[in-house]
Length: 336
Image (tube, rainbow, N blue to C red):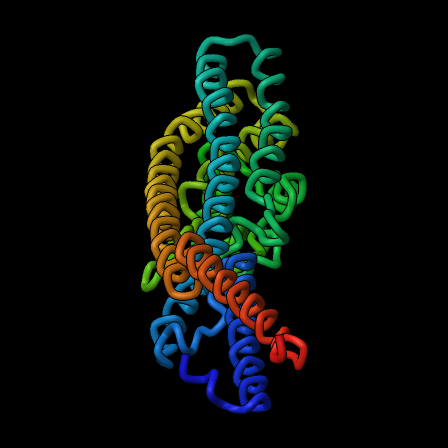
């Protein structure tokens, strides 16, 4: 080899350089094999980090979208549970009350009317539900529970219906209080916001709106029906049996009639849930694709790295052998 003709000092320096280079390469390959990542990304990417930056940005956005989709899924699921509670109360009370108002005994009718107060409370409590500190049916004021209690509603209605001369007068008073714009429900009972709640951004340009507030006419109608029956149970309004039956029949009819509107709300909410699930699947697929690309850019191939490491180890062993042989070129070996 050509370097044998150089002086001892030059030989030593050359061997030192070569050994240091091989050791540095061995350390690099050992690090890549243990960590699974390329040690010099700049060199591996040719100095162009734009692609890696775009991938990492996509992964970060994916985490944001995933969190939003998970929150939206939980939010809509709990809303469905609350609306199911309302629907169950309507299902259980409306037909039974209607049958009793038509042919039931006075005592049974009284029991059902009194029971309506408790059911009104159940409906209000369901609509006042919260998740993660956020009210479900408060519009753009999620920090505020939407409704006063059922008992407070009845207390507000009590003086208004006390002087009602006929069943029809009492029905009109209760319905106006709950349904008329600017009526008692909007000014006293409802405490949420009047604008739409903020949606959930679950993807690029994909915003899920789950905007159902207790101001919805369908929910107000259900509340009015329970309140009307509960007021009869509190012995308010016309006291004759015929009027009481008329009032309870009207309440039952409105409970049954509320079912269609409530089912429509739940169907729209179900469509939002389907979109959320689609977004979650899409986000998961995007995350997988970006993760694969990220690994391609920053991860080292373990098979290639192991092969290169083995070759470097052989180079290092050759250097050790060569250095050992050179060290034997002393005066005794020279004179032998």
